[in-house]
Length: 103
Image (cartoon, rainbow, N blue to C red; front, side, top):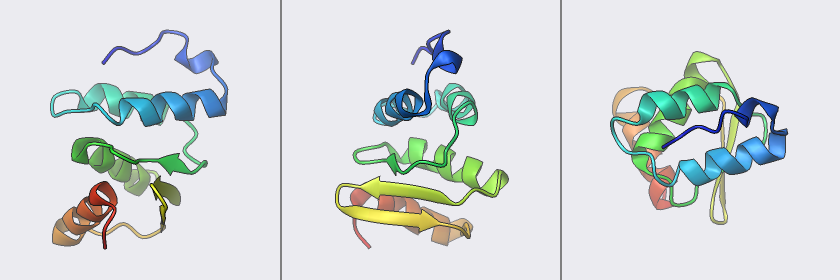
C-alpha cells in the first residue's frame, strides 16, 4: 500500500474514497501505514466498509476508541453508529458483524 504524497491536499470526499478503497486490501503488516492515513482523515462522514478486511476494520475501530469518535459505518445496506467501543470478545464480535454484514 502506497500513500499518495498529495493525500493531505485532497478534499474530505476524496480522502474518504481513498480510505474506503484501501480498506479492501489492508493485511497484517500494513496496519501502521493505513492507521497513519486514517489519522490524516476527518472521520466524521459515513465510511463504507463493505468488503473491508478484518484488519482494516480493527484499525479503524481502534482509532475511533482512542480519539473518542462517534463513527458511522456502512456495510452494504446495514449501518452502524459506534459511540461506545467494546473490548475483548465483544470487539471481535463487532468486527465480525461489520465484516460479514451480519448480527
